[in-house]
Length: 478
Image 1 (cartoon, rainbow, N blue to C red):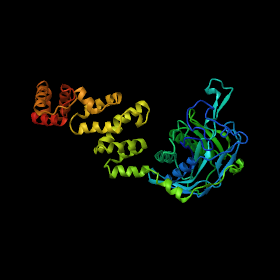
Image 2: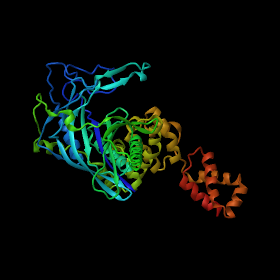
Image 3: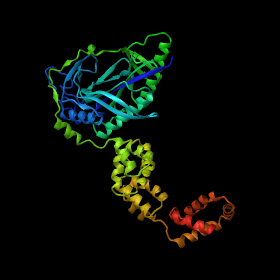
């Protein structure tokens, strides 16, 4: 029997507001444990939550970017459960009346574009973080850091529209990219500001009814999401083929062992005893508010990619690389205001700039080159002041010294030799020193042209104009 997986994702995204959702504590990452806390986020008796308006604005912005309908009225609810990282013993979330409904994301698959539905987006507060003692040298204790308590979250719940781990990964990547473009979150899985749970079930191919779903938690990278889903699909198929029944449960992904492990039976909504939070009034979003927020939306990735191809004449591959990060595309557009050699901008970003990004593990704004300096470097090459080879050698000096490329070219004496008579003497000298290679070239080994160019560049310390050199070689070797 052949089986078909059915996959839905629940994605939690921390919003990058300055303060938490219901209090004025800083919303920052990496502080000393239990320092960004107050009586409100610690759930002390008698305190009252006050909604951060920016959280509503960011949620609406995310909803619009993900093609959702924004509800005029939404309600906060209490989700009741006990866990050490939840000081109030309930989480303020939304249940029956969420703020966003019925959205979608289009992903690219081997069979073309596929639309993944978004059931809802709702606002909620984050819980604290448990730090287990084995990570601190003492497995007998666990510790709680409440700094994260009260951090504003949105939960994005997809429809069960994905049929493979590849589709789930593509959806998650597209979702992350769209949210990064809106600016509502940094979406860093390393910092925990984007977390994903997967609901996975399998059913016989052709069957309409869903199988019993299992929720998988503890996936901290796109690669682990894909691995965990693939393992769970294999596990469920194996269980069914062995005559066993799939139990609805929550399982943890163990990346070291490459398996999912049973954690607890899956809770239903009634287990949480949801009811409207009596301390918070309904959230009302007017049409004017929605229209105002809509005006702040930047162009989304699909539109930016189409623009790069049609308006800037870039190949599809180049456009896909640039659009993969808003910071990359922003840098491209800033540089394009200063030079019209768009392909050169793209090439520099994909080669030297991304090389440094990979070496340092940093973003483009931390590389150390500005759009002004990159455009100046490109112009120096385009105007034949320096060769591309010299420009690449100069690149690291620009990063270190933070100085204008023109200044460095002048100071280091790197101006390209474009005097045809002077270059002809160098070419003749190289050819005279290489009689065997000249003979081989004339006998049909035309690839030796690269050898001659290399020798000439060595003789001129890379400053010879390549175009003139090639013309001279063609003339003198004919």
